Length: 103
Image (cartoon, rainbow, N blue to C red; front, side, top):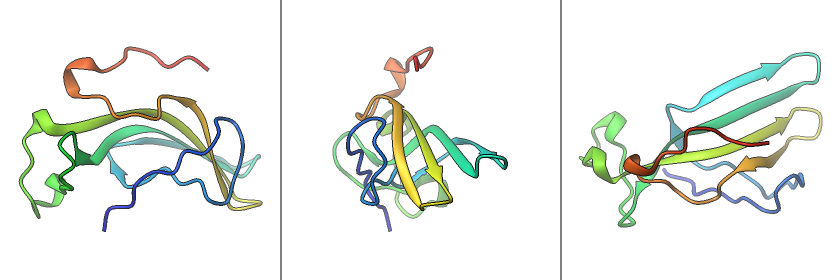
């Protein structure tokens, strides 16, 4: 099942925040700080609101409709909270992908 993101306030940890379902995201685990960082990926919903799982071929979604994410998240293991750290809280269609993210 697709879980939509809950962004909350940028930079503020909250137990209600979640990055939402996605695939092809980049991640990094900082063992010393016990933090997991997650960047971007492709959203499992389309611009027209149809939920699709093209990666698993459950529903066929044209590539032009798959939304791309430009958000950076931090998960702290110590208190089990997600924090939206940077980037946009909106989806970006493939022809409008950003080149960089500014922290």
